[in-house]
Image 1 (tube, rainbow, N blue to C red):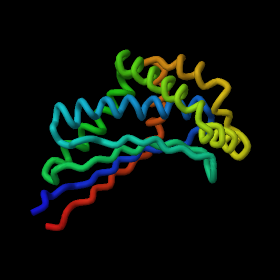
Image 2 (image 1 turned 90 degrees about the vertical axis):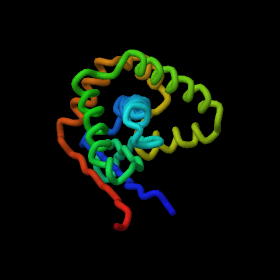
Image 3 (image 1 turned 45 degrees about the vertical axis):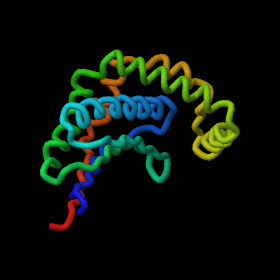
Image 4 (image 1 turned 90 degrees about the horizontal axis):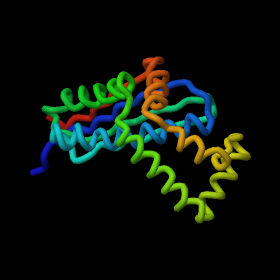
Length: 175
């Protein structure tokens, strides 16, 4: 017999300029929330094996950014788990991330960049971004990543959430 599970998707979106700075900060928030949810949803609450945090951004047809948080949980715990997800995002906007999470995020972003620049696919995608979206993902990347601070993340997420665009989707098992 299968254990019943509820799948939850919680999405924030905001109109914002499509530029490298915003792309990097969405990447940073994705990383920070991923670490946060390992602690809160998995370790503290024991409500899921893991949450997927994914940034989404687009230039066309309109410039926007989004953050999707998705996870599976016990149907009886879905409300509590969703409360934790929202509280963690609001806490990030109110207090900013820990210095530890910011340092890990900077290290991971720079390490991943070093690993990717030796691959042809990185350069192909960089050229596509440059010529089709007018987005230079090469020139200032390291400088922007090194400039990530708890205060800057707090400021970015606060502005991002100010538009109050979010949606919750829950898929429950048959009763």
